[in-house]
Image (cartoon, rainbow, N blue to C red):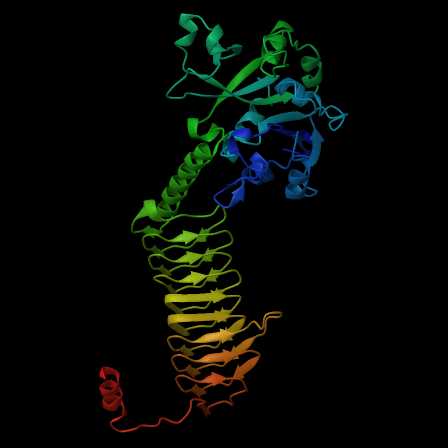
Amino acid sequence: MSSTDLAVIILAAGKGTRMKSSTHKVLHPLAGHPMLMHLMDRLVPLSPSRKVVVVGAGKEQVENAVGDISEIVVQEPQLGTGHAVQVTRDALEGFDGNVLILYGDVPMLTEETLQAMVDARMGDTAASVVVLGFRPADTKAYGRLVVNGSGELEAIVEHKDASEEQRKIDLCNSGIMAVDGKELFTLLDLVSNDNASSEYYLTDIVEIARSRGLTCSVVEADEQEVMGINSRRELAEAEAVFQNRRRDWFMAEGVTLIDPNTVFFAHDTRVGRDVVIGPNVFFGPGVTIDDNVKIHSFSHLEGCTVHSGASVGPFARLRPNADIGEGAKIGNFVEIKKSTIEKDAKVSHLTYIGDARVGEGANIGAGTITCNYDGFNKFKTDIGKGAFIGSNTSLVAPVTIGDGAIVGAGSVVTKEVSADALAVTRASQKELGGWALKFRQNQKK
């Protein structure tokens, strides 16, 4: 498809009052990514030439989220879904290709479904209006799609207006459409607001199109794919659907999840083959895991890369810009932030490494801290290849530890340590014989 063939309208003017939030409804995150941006991501393979988001309140929030990848149009006052599409007329002036009409609070649509709708608008059997239908377990809340023997959509009938026979139809309306751009605004101009709500309903264009001799058709999607999110509960339900899909997909691609229901992925998590992920692991956005990695239980990863053969956790935290080299080990209660841990290095216990490089094969003892922040600025620690840092060491940045150097346990290092040198900064040990016995005796008096 040529990029000039498709425009997309995303309706996002609802107030979202059920969210009870100062954040615009469509910007609430699903798998660490705003709902609206899930839709934007799904549109990339379709290469639309125009994207228009219709908003009411919260225009600035949406503009900041989409940047220059979409045009923002304000619907004020809000007079229904038909009116919401009508306000895009100026933005789409001169456009006569295919128009996809989506909803910003329906973020689970797949690329395949969107492409199927566009395809239904093309070719010898092209329909002027294509409606996305689904078959819910409970149909009472939805309008029915009445299809004739030829598979053409004849009408959309709301549940309250449907006959007993029509209520037996389980094919329901999602509200999502693909429309011939040459006909869209002509059809909308004929929509009336003569109804109990005095609103202009987008669904009315099906009846109008049929009366003008135009063809309407249906593409079907899974019920979960057209989930609308209007409340925190529905957001949690959508999150559960997303996570289950991702878990199934990763396992099908060669990832072992020991307890799948306790592992949570972000929208962009990348995991290679033969990776083993333990229970209660959380992936924030921006994580890439190469092949043959082990992520042990209760670990939290975000914005990081873990290379082949490495081991992380249990109870480890990898923060943004942590880069864990091949075969490296990040052990229990270790936190890594904005640091490179090179091949086969070990950071095994109770350690914080921030703004640092840990060289190949280096060993960082338990309780080591890189003191990288002075209250105003961050400084770097550089630990050389094969270096050994003893337990309970504080490395006060900026500082360099040379290749092969050893730092004795309990040291506070503030100056460069040369390659292959030993650095020890703790005070000499003293012993006062019998002191402890005398102390206890005095306490009993």
